[in-house]
Image (cartoon, rainbow, N blue to C red; front, side, top):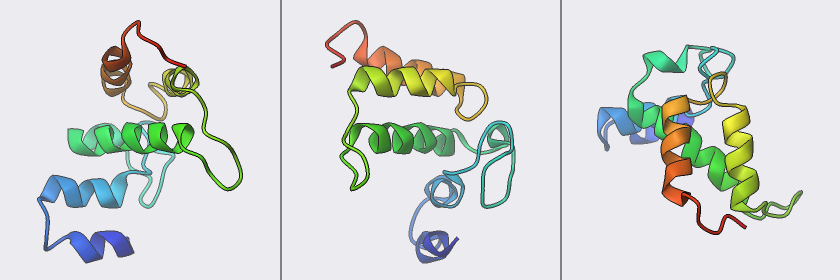
Amino acid sequence: EAGHRLVVDLVDDDVAAAVLHHHERLDAGGYPHGVDARRLPLTVRIVQVADAFDAITSDRPYEPAAPVRTAIAELSRCSGDQFDPDVVAALSAVFGDGDLS
């Protein structure tokens, strides 16, 4: 919510909504408001998937980066509950049958 307050007057409404709601879920189990992400702009649902993909494929202090193939599998596993299935499918299509290691 603090990030949203910082950007709300500076960026497009959909971008501000993505900052506020990128941790919401399709099953309404997310935060900060526990809303069904299907009710949010497509921009939010895209940022949700992109943020998770980045988290999985980037080195973290507590865990090394996972391969793209692992990230796609995890996003697909959570598709429909946590993430928008169409957005996950679009990300998966970007990588196609190429090298996902």
